[in-house]
Image (cartoon, rainbow, N blue to C red; front, side, top):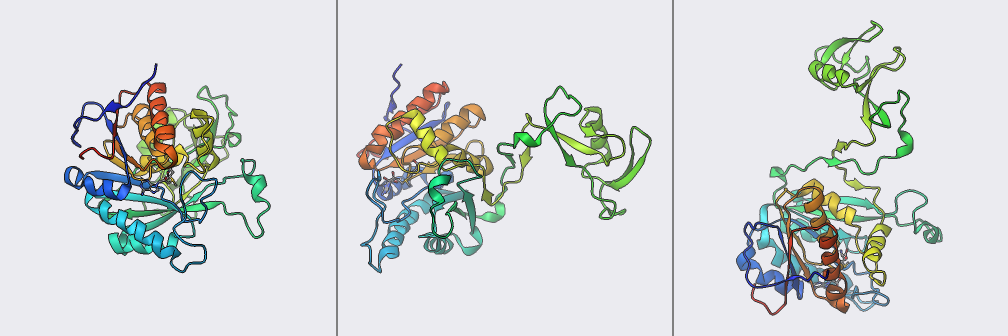
Length: 381
Ligand SMILES: C[S@@+](CC[C@H](N)C(=O)[O-])C[C@H]1O[C@@H](n2cnc3c(N)ncnc32)[C@H](O)[C@@H]1O
């Protein structure tokens, strides 16, 4: 069955029965400005992956060159371009908005200064994406030829409307390493790993929280400061989640491979390979030759961490639609109610050849009931 985006008739950014995703064609600066009337203070989460100003235009699907090679104006031109777009973005942000911007070393300093000026120094932070994780991933071989060191990372600059009122969600631990898990007691719940459940005797404070004595199945008494209350410890023991070992060890907590573990997100994002983005896009369109689409998992990581369940999401450098795929999939798999706006100038046919077919395919695959609405640049917003 061929699915096509719904025709744009009229819309309101308010609540709809099924989440709606608007794909808007046009130059993002003028589209963002056009959106001011209906979408003021609407967006809680923005992710953008702007041109990095690498100077490369050949073999690329889009222009990433804002300068004549030896021109002193090269950063200035990029900055003027970005400032115009951020000025247009500011009125669209909700009071709890967070903006993530992918970038590499070339424009990092200029981007940080721009965002500090617009959001305030206190409201700007930097994350690192370790994009070539571990040995054995595609891309390693080529990079061994680097003369000094391989560049295995890039940045995500984070800007908050008001950092003080934000609390990020804990996230599920990405891809545990299976070989670290075992099952010495043949637990039917499958492989597990043990984790510390108390402080050492030396570090335990008798006057501190959760300082109490437990008695092991062999009758040995252990007095420590525990990471859980006594009642919680007893509940975990009843559920067979305390590992007593041979009776001579300090008990530990069993954490199962198959159960999601919530962890505090880190400023360093690992375990997500850059090549995943290309593989994902190729799996959707084998002929796609867009360089470096972002991995869908990278954007899901940011959404899981920072987007409220019914957030309005905006990506105004939407490219091949990685953000769109992340949003559509999380609405199905995580029960989110994300609504989104994706803006693309359709450079080199990216919007019609990659983004729209990709979202239609994802929608069909997941039997998503979300609406996808295409808005042409000439429509009133
Ligand atoms: C780095 S790519 C984004 C890739 C995207 N994150 C993905 O995973 O596919 C930047 C995209 O922004 C587009 N672009 C550049 N200038 C633009 C503008 N003024 N308005 C809208 N899109 C623009 C480019 O054509 C390109 O597709």
